[in-house]
Length: 183
Image (tube, rainbow, N blue to C red; front, top):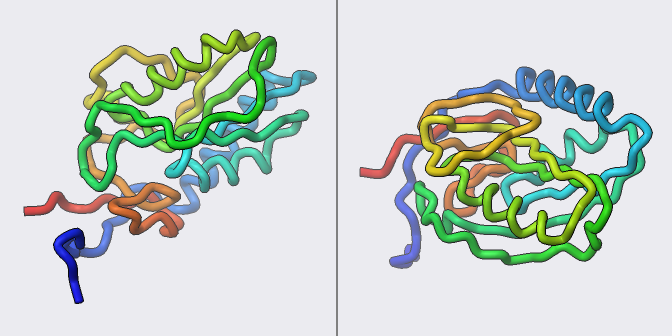
């Protein structure tokens, strides 16, 4: 029996970035990172939950010693628009001082979450810190952010798939799709 917490079904996501194109770009990004960090050890940080598929795909192509860490943050809840308020749901276990850090993010939308993460992690005094995102919405930015490794620039579509969800659904799609706004 449906509850008042259930979201209305909003249809099947339409494909925006096909699986083959995603995988090709992940390989290109991994090659850039391999070049930039040759001979260095990194701390690879997966921003949960949406980045786990992208993170898994890219770290398997990185050719350097690395420690994998997971940072849980939330700014969407079950909404289609970021609340602008970032909640940390899981912190890192590994100290970052004097280490080379790469933050792997699924999507940079408003820029508020990645800015919050960068500020919080810079306080831990890493040797360097860079960002890698699968998707970037330049038209949605509310703060200036620099992305070091960028997968795809997209419009203002609400995207799902490839680890990204809407109210817990659609993470398992092998492509990036978009869904229509609720009416």
